[in-house]
Image (cartoon, rainbow, N blue to C red; front, top):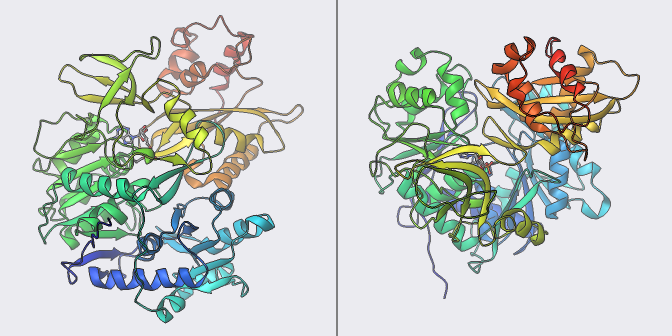
Length: 594
Ligand code: PRX
């Protein structure tokens, strides 16, 4: 039997979404639940009229305006599977995602202002669509006009339209009927695909299904952000819908719960470092959810940006995406929350659909830097990688796994169930393997220590070292590349690349710049390496395996001084290297500016 749950139906005139544009002088707009439903229905009819039906995939490459959650929900209304591609991704990344998902419709925009920059989304989308093979091409591209005349003048290609393929999104929406019956779905029918980087190979199309995902995003939202239905609650998740955080805690969780939330198009430091706090004051935000990297960047700008705003509406503060260092936690607690707002440090993943380890506000004591305890129903376990046994009791450290399923867990990887089983279930028999390491302290609290595989978390974004390496190797002058992370004050972790050039090619400042640019263009600006270290060779074992442990140490700025003074102890055992002299070359390379 269908469970006919109509979120927001009892409160049609309540505000569902508030729009805060990149340009703070643009007057905020809002939509009630009933207006939202009308726009979702119109958009769903536009999709239907372009041949989309239940089970078909639709790719969304949009700015953070109302149109992004509206397009997601329009897909959900007719049983189409949305695949949102973050608007910071490159044309190659968009192309790969359109191809893998088999999307036949793309919804995009002419462009978007992000801080002071303008991103010409249409040019990127055109490059992606034009480079697809004939059988992978999209049939229709709906284009939202977002740029103002001045921005368009500076980006003329954003106005390009292919009349055989491109459709004016707003005109089509306005012409469509506002009556669109819901397509009823089975709980296990696909709801969306969201691509996330893998430690090897191509990005993984994480598949979430209708029933479990909605139950889990709604339930975690209400409990973790202490939403009890107060009409004055204004929830603000600063994440873009291009990431899972924006899916679960903007498009789905709050709306399923009937809560008002903010759609934010901008960035934390534009027009200045008080943007978050002026917005909190302006809309009287009660629950605020952001990433540690944003907090660290704002913390550096000084407390006055926070103090000049009235933040007394705030009740709960949240973080997500990476471990929050105690200094940033304290600052968030004291300067932003004035010591009155519990901080929910939520640990979860694209694959988990919603929060897994998290405090519940006021329910148990907090410890700065710990995501505390599992959400109810979550059976977390730590496995010892050597013995492959589960570690019992407290004061233990191992690989973080789940020993029971939960409603929001991913059901598959799109088109590749085998890879799903292999990546998440093959390492420890009977467990879902998260790929993170964690400690359980004397009180049973969890402390996530970071990835145990070749993944980096840069500014809270998951980046596979393999993807970055293959982008380097795609350059004509590059023979080999190895990428590691190094601690970075704002980004948490940043990219350090060791690059071996082809015979006869000299490393230069220009080449270094060109390589960084290539990676940023191919993978997205957030993947831009901070350091490119040219080296004659990479440290390899006799079996040819790169010893990343050594590369990580050399990349760590806190070790540089010692290493340059000839103290190589921190590198540990280097006797298994095929050529141990390479260590000397690598350390000497630290003297060059990278
Ligand atoms: O390493 C963990 C880190 O982010 C990874 C998941 O990344 P993604 O799928 O992109 O989803 C990010 C948003 C949910 C995890 O494997 N991570 C996420 N939240 C935390 C965290 N690490 C420590 N503490 C957190 N609160």
